[in-house]
Length: 391
Ligand code: PLP
Picture (cartoon, rainbow, N blue to C red):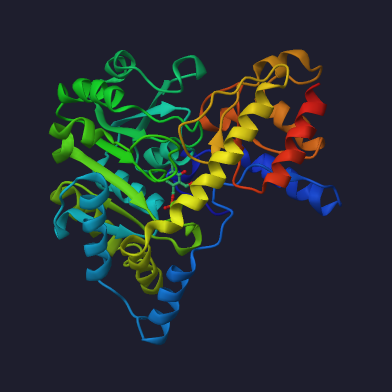
């Protein structure tokens, strides 16, 4: 037997895997399963972005690039932050990685030591706690249920901070809840963080453009005093339907970005050259490709939230953004014989032909995550099946 590293034992296999595996098994057995688990837009990458990649291939942009990104892409990222977020960075404060996920992983590896604590609001994106553990640190979870809009309060944040806290993670609009913090709410969290200068903040802005109303703000916009200890993470995956291209980026204090670059230089080097060329076209090009996708997501959101709220035992808060919603399923769990929790409910609904991810996978029991990154036709069928199964 090969003895594996301790860090492997620390990371739990995702509870979503059970549902995904069961869905595949049922499909293979000929059952009709509608998947509401997707974490990516169902649209194709816009044509002008694909064309830029094809041109890059034909013009020989097929070699290693600088570790931290091509000059053209770094410039596009710097311009993006200035244009869309009102934030100024220079080249040494920006690192391009193979996805926002990779940026986040570089950050945790560059910042955390054994025993350090990372504050993560729940429901959370599944990778945050496990990344912290891979970097030898301890996730500290703050729960925020539907009654508080899935958003933590300043009091909760203050209560979770210890002298070992090194990092605070914020993701708004949020996967899995679709909730977004207002500028005032972010400013209030910022007031707490201002009192604790040892804490680095990371804002994961990957769903920035999938926001149904109002203007996007992050914690640096709300509390500019935090800029010199905040890392802003973003990427092209969700806004431009580019999940497979694997390009994300981070901006923040030079020393920390430099440390992240050092780790990247000894692990993965530069992100794919062709994908970087495509990302330049995405960030610098016509932004008119975003609103039609947003409009589709909003239409589907309205339909799904309305349909869910008509089902007895299901309660769904309308979202501010993303292509997910996070209904409270506790009423349905309570009334179904043989279903004792959200994982069993997901198993039960799978038998009825709908695959969704239980809330406990995201750190909050009694809920489910539904992705509406699928066709209206599929969503209509899926809502009918859920209504019938729970009716
Ligand atoms: N952050 C959040 C909250 C996400 O939901 C995802 C993707 O699911 C990512 C980061 C990763 O995005 P990328 O494709 O850029 O690695």
